[in-house]
Image (cartoon, rainbow, N blue to C red; front, side):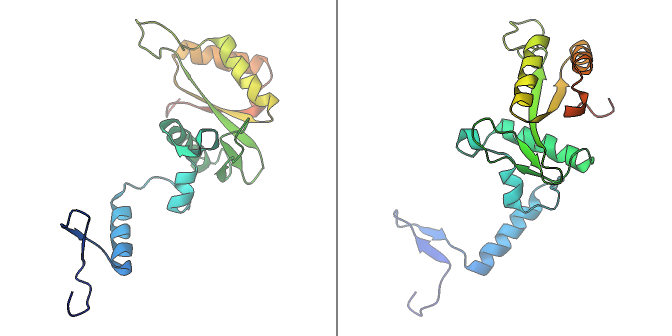
Length: 182
């Protein structure tokens, strides 16, 4: 402007005015946006730390839906006191999801689904006990304990998995993540 003061408007390449904010205004707008987000348990983490819990080092540190689900499970178990404060495992290959900063234990999340395409359609990718045990044992071989998300298993599949884990003596390396109340 002619008087040298910032009008709050800038002109883009199209010549139309665009809104710009000064630093104080930007901080206030960021706080307003943050306050509008529903609060969930974040364990006292900053926004960046919370986002980083969902980043996957094996996928160029992207935040994908699977990472968000794993973050939710990890934070829920942390809130319940079943694991200590978690951080994302930065290891790209053969890494776990989380490291418990209190114990140093690495935790990998495994989710199994009884009917991934519905009960009446093809069962490609459906739960099979032998495959589930093999995946869990692979994590043990990598030095990880395992969080097993059973929310999408039928009751009978869940019970067979629990029984197999118990019979193999793996129970001390497993945390079960079930529906609330189960």
